[in-house]
Amino acid sequence: MTALIAARGLTRVLPETVPVTLVKDISLEIDPNSFVAITGPSGSGKSSLLYLLGLLDRPTNGTILVEGRDTGPMSEAERARTRLSMIGFVFQFHFLLPEFSARQNVEIPMRKMGRLAPREMRGRAEELLDALGLADHRNKRPDQLSGGQRQRVAVARALANDPPLVLADEPTGSLDSQSSEQVFEILRSLVRERGKTVVAVTHDLDMAARMDRRVHLVDGMLAEAED
Image (tube, rainbow, N blue to C red; front, top):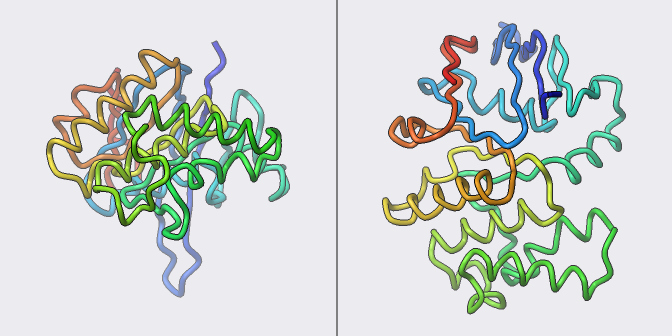
């Protein structure tokens, strides 16, 4: 089986006056239809690794493969197309556009992709929101939604282009315990019911223990990987 996404000798160094190494010589493979936690203390490189895997940042050394394809030689336009089609992102803070409704926010990645007609985009956005329990909130702006509802809209937006991979950076970090559990169950259902791969950075070790696999970082290096 070809890994959905793989890192080979991944290193990222910030070229400051005194260089700062964010991640160092990380090699790992993420299989299709898996639920993976990235854990580690603050400053261990968790988010940096996620941004590299998501093609939001380029490594100083090493290679990232998406379905076996080397992303290193890609132009910025190719990387952007790959992100749009292959990867959905959920962050700790929802980053919804405040002037748009929930439905319009979910439509944004589809508009960037440019594959669907406006009616099709609207229908898909509504279908995703309905599936996440937000049928009655489609036309509300983010400031009219609770924190948990905003994060569910962010999940719907991540799924807009039906990507096989969802990357989540502390997706429950700003939520209360009840909303955190709801978002966790949604992410787990993406794997169990929709066949997605979800990779989530989390400080919550109880949550990580309920996932299929844990990748643990210390000082920017891979300390352990538990299947």
